[in-house]
Image (cartoon, rainbow, N blue to C red; front, top):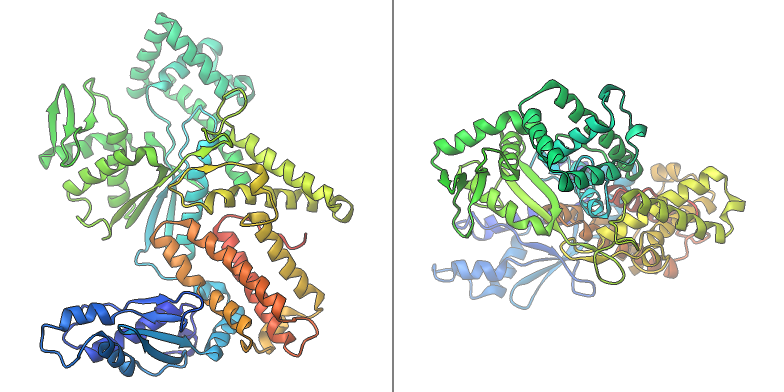
Length: 590
């Protein structure tokens, strides 16, 4: 194995390779057994553990084996393990668990290599080449509110982690740009602006208010309602005047959305519901030709085992619905975009809809029966954002909280805290503004991502902007402190990377080094389970480990200064990559 390959920063994967050889030598007649390697808990014997012995024993015990039980299997696996410079020692404990202690020298060399070759050499490799992440997806003519925050932030982080893991990600904004609401919006636009060509964003003003006014008129005025219903038919029939008005409304909405995405530094490519319209009829026909579509109460539906209601794919009035569009989008993503993994990020309330149309796709033979085999689909559900009263997060007047207002508030509060600490005297106005934005927006993102996404979470500016505990503020400050330690040393860190040597002789140096080396497996776990909170937990623990190291190991002015500065830099590099994956901008001074 080439030296640089030997040192890629994924000890778990490397040990799996070694134990794979050992398994083949120990039980050559059981080729299907995969190595089970896991990181050991702190304070346990060893850094990693191989847990194959008990499971293997249950497979081979009735087959006339020479082994007398799991401990003997463990001993044999340990003896067959190929020698490797990464392994310091091994021992067998209890019912055959093999504890592995990594070589501190190998660990140090792996970290040195990362500092020279870059953290991208530590990127995990996933079993897919191309994925779709469908996230954010607001409705046209409605403002983005706090409910869109979670989908946008979680989706962006999943996309970033997959991209880091060398997957080509199609970031899809499946906006609600089609449907019956456009009838009333277009008719109201014609009434207010007979010359639709000259309509501008400023003329319409607040699109949210425009939507409410048109809805109110639709509900109260039967003549307007009739016109609006006719407008839907004309729009769907391709009438150029109606198409043009529809495009205008979409364009104004899109401009508003893009302002929010720019602030959050989120990139998306829009392929809204309307994009899939030309394909729907053929997709329904394909499902029909497979005998899946049946008539029921005038509608065309797919009956699915395990659900007491059918999946309606054509309404009784002949119109299409969410299921028709979603099935068509899935067909398109599998057949036209050739995606191997399609991930949908929406609230948990839509779980049943996804379960039903995924099941229909399996029934059609589009997807394998196993939900862990590729091509694969996953619904990444998330809970509600609650106010401090434990109810849905709303404004005092019971309105949904606009996302732009929420971001403004976060930045303002962050700036106020910096001014209270006298930073307006030390920094330029640009530095103050940029730091306030990085900390404010970072706080909002991290407060969301650190929770297990399936649970509801309470939105509290006071908690998320606190510089104590598991918050972005605490973590960004920790990174800035490391940067200032390196700066204070007066050493050229890039020069040190080339000439300096790193050693992990002190227990706390070693503990920090081990945690750094677990970065790749953590990103892999967060991707595989679609849980950004796993990465947040890792980052918080890293900051904690660094604090313990710094409290016990003098850096500047010690005989180990060079080595410890390199360890500081490695910590900062890994922290910055964590921030990048979470969509947070690092700060270098506080």
